[in-house]
Image (cartoon, helix red, strand yellow):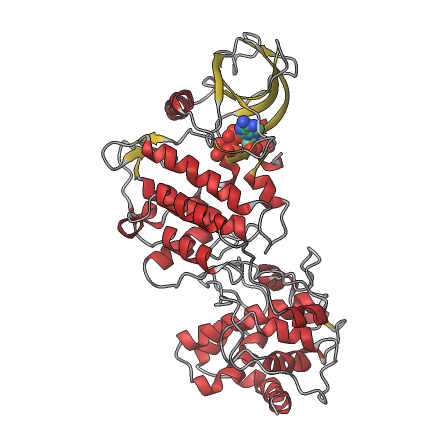
Length: 514
Ligand SMILES: Nc1ncnc2c1ncn2[C@@H]1O[C@H](COP(=O)(O)OP(=O)(O)OP(=O)(O)O)[C@@H](O)[C@H]1O
């Protein structure tokens, strides 16, 4: 299971050895560890019933930690004991660990649960970016049903995320990890400021955290469901851009403030796009209209309808290019500057949305010097961007000026390599798997060109936001690709030192636009 989780717990508390017995259960290997406990494979001593035992230690912690853990454990135990629904993991017993030789674990609470085969997190990790997780709709239906039951019973999950959705041996879908589940008091409850950044609603950040912790309401679970559904239907893409959870949460907050639009993945089916967009309504009040029960009945209708597919790029272009319709890869937020192509930590994902064909996207003239094998790749890459300026001709002109279509081009002094002359560290932040081989490689022309399209799309949007003259956009993009968005915006035009390069791009562009 999740190696990260296993490591995380390893140094915090000792492990119980395989064969250790807790009441009628015998432990086997560790499945994984979370922030508060370790989960073991186990079986019933009497009849071999498979189980998973979560051991929640209460010793060996500082006083503050102990208080917080005590509360979480109490919640998890209480909720687990009360929860009874096919979409909530079943707790068969709550026991106490008797291990005087291991003081850190002696007296720990052990929750004996039905054992899952995998978590949704693992399924996502095993799914290629851009593909749906197998059985996606059924899984989402199970999650919505579990959530609806919790809300009806007056609880909020508070930590809905793929790691907390378990998949049983016979395809069961179980919500798990109720440490943050909290009982509703009127319309909201309180919980400590834990949870996972990636699934917290934007209003979380503007709430004051009082003695009882932040307010948590069912609408927080609705938001988390929207994020999770987007991940499940896109092979793990988060709906907000950023390389880190913190960056993504900042992007979600910018969206909630109205300074950035919501850009869901281009391949999403219309109905799902609408449903996810509603779950991700920017504020609690708007989200109030949507209940988990309402989501469940919509998903049931969706599943009953004709079979749905992610929208793919036009087959002809894809087949010719030898590339798969790998979905738009999430762009990443970057760290420190690198070379001349600087990076802006505030940037968002360009509008590579809707699977729409770029309005000005034409073919590249057959008698041009653009190699035939590259043409369909370039055309498909340009379709990643809905902005009219980013055409196959512009991409071709940029590539011609950058490398002369040489896949092995390199300028080591400037750390630029491959057909699109990517600086490796910059490439990594934007990388798209253009050829669908599961790898993102700046020396692979489809990867380099698809990534170029994404980056250029973002430059185009930056320059429009900065109100630079629209008629100059191709020149500005060429300059931005050679320098940085910031340099071009600060100079309010093409910097003199890259003027010859920009003129060359414009010459090629004129030739390819014929
Ligand atoms: N009933 C179960 N059957 C099989 N695996 C389980 C079961 N419950 C939890 N796990 C797995 O055990 C690991 C640890 O789970 P745990 O709930 O302790 O932490 P987490 O959810 O990864 O993190 P945190 O609780 O800090 O959010 C995870 O990989 C989880 O998928």
